[in-house]
Picture 1 (cartoon, rainbow, N blue to C red):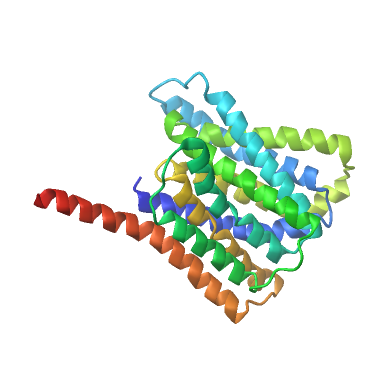
Picture 2: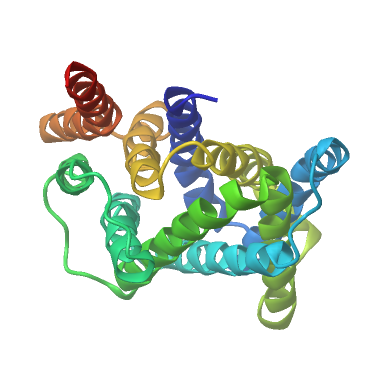
Length: 300
């Protein structure tokens, strides 16, 4: 898979997650946050299971000894992000949630430098700032005073950044993206259902009321989108992946218009353009500079 194809996978994930904001914001009218998380990821694990079994049969090398514990850590990071985002949506707006969740675009390169001692391509820093600014404009260019839900969503962005960074480390090393996906989904499903059983009531009527959202979030937002993320990240870097996945805010606004009758302000359209500019910069500039270096070496 080429880097362009990998980034298209990540862009597709962003589109699915953008539509998922609608499902997440409406599901809690019928069901609790923890049950929603547990059930959606249980469905996602079932989606990934046959792919993981097929991958196992076709694997040329055995699974590394420490792979499963690493996959569980990724699942815990994913669960932390899912819980904080879902609870944050109870007391913040979708606009604020979209912007604040997008802060992982900035957190990923920072964590990469701090913990991995890896210096990303210089374009990542201005592109991350551009993408964050674009998300801010997409939110209308003004945020209300931070609420408890806003603070939870900032913590969510940190969890997403950790998950992205860990996937970037362990997915290429193991060559088992489907097993990684299924494992992280199973961790979220088990943790969500156990905690929900302790703290949230559940009824058949609640499940029926939120069933369309649970199915969309389980099959598409959790299953297909995260699988695309894991596959795509095998062929690109975590900071670049964060830029492309940040398009979820753009798609959230678009689906809000189509499905909820929301409107995008003129400054919001500017934000859309800024986000795509950041994505194009991440895609094109490394390739152009690489070709220039190769041409310079060939001329010597």
